[in-house]
Image 1 (cartoon, rainbow, N blue to C red):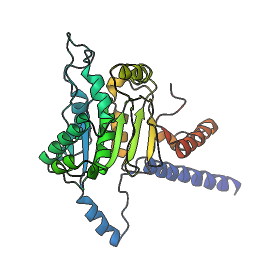
Image 2: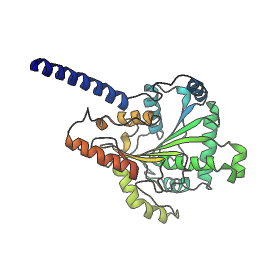
Image 3: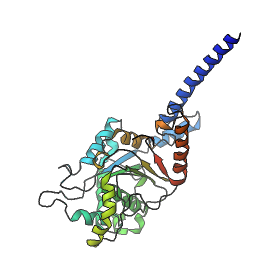
Image 4: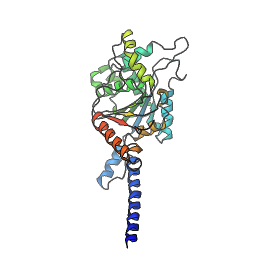
Length: 319
């Protein structure tokens, strides 16, 4: 009888482990909509489908060290989203306003002034950027009420912060309002962006993707303010966006260099998972990453996430 009891306990334990694995996997990798409840909720889901989720892609500055194609970051992001099932009509690649670098102008002066002015909503650079965005959205049939997700690589992220501000405050800019509607920004995602000014409206979600191995962000944050002041642009530069609120998150990825944000699979997967509040990295599952040390690290990281809006996308013990 004792052996039978032990055998039964072992069977129950194995069944429990299988159930935990299934539950952990479904929590970590659950689709955005999940299981819909019956009844009226289905009607709500149908109405929400009429609002498109449109990804607006913008590249950063171009230097002699960059790819010869100055819009390469946006184009690669487009390819990654298409590969993951996003419809082509819901991806808008914006023209890059930064000048082409060449051997005569390896680091064009305009890139400094454009970056500084892109942080100022009343500047010509910012308002021309909004008109350019409007024309690109209009060309793909995007409506003002559709949900826009701006993905900006490097300096393209700062432009997105300002575009979202202009969209929310378009009534303050009468001439601009005559040429373009107030679009609805759902989220702005910054990929390796040195942030000058964060004027993002509170209701717009901010996701700042940062890697300690992205040396460009650190170099720009260290020397950028001096360069900007030299050219008469009174804008600071920050590694992390100032003025974070409850709707914002800083996501930390290990080992991502500046030119790889647009092709890193875990970054692209995380972008699409932003629609699901329950989605979290695999290492957050106590089944897939067991042990006391992993458990304590999870508690610490959850505290940072809840109180400081900083989320670790990779295990802290990973080198």
